[in-house]
Image (tube, rainbow, N blue to C red; front, top):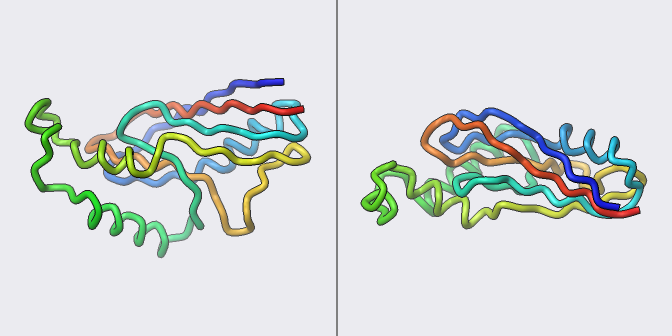
Amino acid sequence: MIVTKKISLSTRGECDIIDITPQVAEQVSQSGIDSGVVTIFVAGSTAGVTTIEFEPGLISDLEGMWQRIAPKGIPYDHDRRWGDGNGYAHVRASLLGASLVVPVSSKKLTLGTWQQIVLVDFDNRPRSREVNLQIMGD
């Protein structure tokens, strides 16, 4: 069986990191699928998804890491072409990735004790985001 669901949320942009674990877990629980996988996919080219320990120290570390890897405030060819000033956001999102697959067992996500699913919005402005879930299994 395959069940497709959607999570809609608003972000602040600028490396806004949002714990979406409760919403994903709820959709998995309600899907009727006992065992399988859930694919989490964020639509858009300036956001990504991953797992982290969602705590203030690591959130700060993650934000700092992105500034070191793909800094804001340096020239990007994307900005020269489009003038929207978010070239860094596109680069960061491409490095993080738009999707994540998590196993499901007994209608629950099989995450580690300190592991949460997060959406990271890198864009230079607030956004409305849609996270698509495809839950597959028996």
